[in-house]
Image (tube, rainbow, N blue to C red; front, top):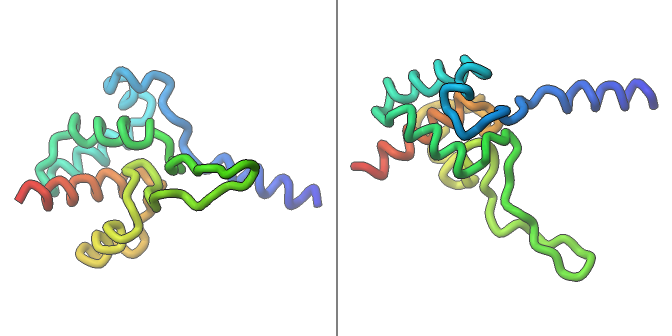
Length: 129
């Protein structure tokens, strides 16, 4: 039983914590340099500026990897979520599947910043056309 508890604690630590100061993108990138590299890669691929990509992430998820919409309640019972949005980009299941199908990214995850930024670049490129 103790082994299971230790394993669950270890897995819980695998998700990146939100930045200490999400108001300042320079401090966010100083804390997480890989996010800057991911944002630059998405900008290069899709043409969406880094500041726009990061503004989407901040607004949609507050830089929380496992962000989900609030669950409504009826008395003491939780009801189904109103949306399948999940992750940094708050991508919903149908559009996430379409993104993966069109781009061949079967191993991408909405919990990874790089995947979410690439998705946002793809999405903004698509709606811009």
